Each structure stands twice: as structure tokens, then as C-alpha cells.
Length: 103
Image (cartoon, rainbow, N blue to C red):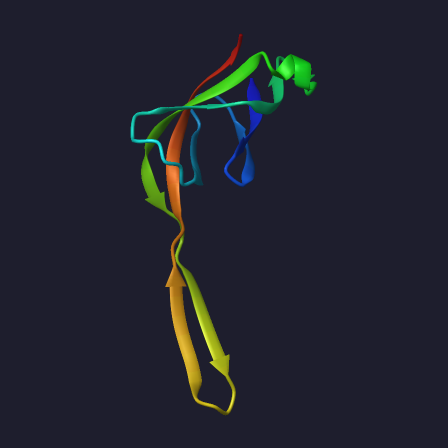
């Protein structure tokens, strides 16, 4: 059984015991997050209708904060001597999916 959920700005395919890095959320470590799935596949049956999906929920436990890969930004203008170097690391929250349940 797996589900497609909207976590932050992306859609993620999740199943039980998956560990995901999602966009940063405000919940503390050990807290529980509940998502409404967009699609559920259970024993080969695909559920996509909104009225049937309202009975499903996906729960996840917050494991902690992580950082994404380093992104190097270089700006350069020819013949002017202008060079600038920046870096960025996006902050993420690591979560573990604990259950996909039907109400």
C-alpha cells in the first residue's frame, strides 16, 4: 500500500516506514504530522475520488531538521572586474511515515 501526498511544495510517494526530507515545518522533533492523500493504491486498487479519499489519512513522525546540498552561485561580468560568489543550503525536515489508515 502506498499513497501520494502533498508535502510542502512537492508531491511525494510514501509508504509505511519511509524516511523523507520535506520542506521545513514548524513541528518539534517527535511530533506527529497528518496529511490528506491525493491518491491511494491498496492491493492494486487505485482510489482517486475526493469523497473516498476523505476516509484516508497518512501520519508521519518528525525525526529532526536537516540541510540540503550546497548550491554555489557565481556571478561574473566580463571586462569590469566584477565577481561575486554566494552559497545556499536549504533547510529540510526529516520525517518517517508511521501509517496509512482508512477511517
